[in-house]
Length: 256
Length: 87
Image (tube, rainbow over all chains, first blue to last red):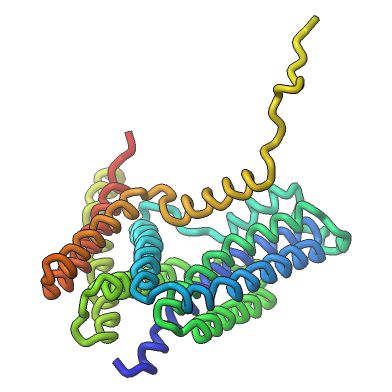
């Protein structure tokens, strides 16, 4: 595969994965802002981003420079494979109705309720609020940590940290921009489709890099990533069809 | 005299390094294991088999086929487990 094609595939994978995590973080930040005041929520978010930036600056170059590339690819590939399989499994189960769709509105309401606030008339609050700060910090930090792992994993495994970081940054900016416009209409993001695509890419990159680290020589070199995406895509669609077919007679029997 | 429950032997909240380590461990547990331990264990088994094929047996073609096939079986198996009614 031409290096540019490989870089584009990597950037798309990082962008989509980071966008999904950013939507989850944004939901929590908006919930904290609306119910406890925007000042503390935004401060919590900013401190979490600063801590994550320090983590990336400290760990990124050390990972790439000090760890042998085969070890790095095996470990990172294994992490991406397991993480991607979790996403793909959830996406399959959600697509066939065996698991509830990830409802951002419900998550928003849950966080607002937990913070003891209401969504009306509280936006005027401007004072500092420890609970709002803590919730926004925790939400941003935990979701951001997953973005960091994806950036270090995908970027570090292919020595493309700067590109991976830029793709993640672009995703965060896009989600934040959309968040400013639509604020609470977060449920409109087609998350399950995105999670399926991201899961496919993470599993494919994970397989490829773990294989490379273990000494597997993939036919066609980087082109194998696209082949793996295709193979896993077919398997995922087949699983969805199989499960839909299996659950249809049960539903018909139940409705009869 | 009633026993003082908050005496010198009573334990307070653990020190911050312990809490930090617990939170760090909990994050990685949730990140890698969560409610699907079969995926982590299965992935390690598949990777172990591929390592044997690629390094010990030097059968590259078998490793190229076995890796994605093993991952596909793992995904199918995990979805099947999730479909089964919990007892």
